[in-house]
Length: 174
Image (cartoon, rainbow, N blue to C red; front, side):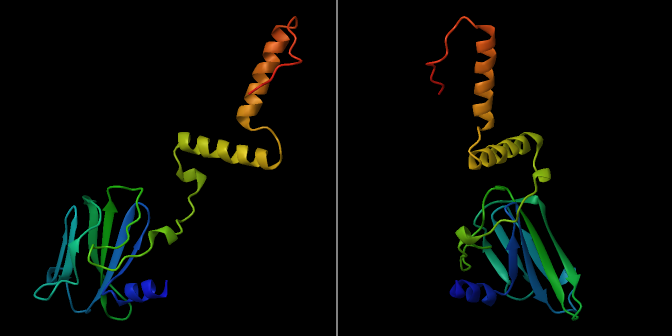
């Protein structure tokens, strides 16, 4: 892990990602303006730097981005420098990237701790499913029936009350 941290610290840019997007920051001299920069975001390629100099980033992206939703800005920092902020909108929003461009050192994506999402962030159907799973997990931990087990038991009780003439003493419920 120490080697990975050193490799990332040595890059001429900083980057961070969520499962849906990736943000890159590059420090540049404070006297530069947007027109002094080259930032070219393509579906599978990124080039960024100062005009007339070797690009700071130039390479193939490991995965595709949405060029319409990806942006860049130049912001002033308190220390008098400026920062190029590049926002890449991932097309596959279920994938962590091991690096910004394929020539850069990789990070171990299995060690990424995703930010906790709140139930309120989920759409109704997914939220209902997650809440049911959480309820069932709590029920199991307490040795109580899950929602499915309870549903089966309720159906059986109803059937038994509708058919008192039947003997259910040896019934095995799966």
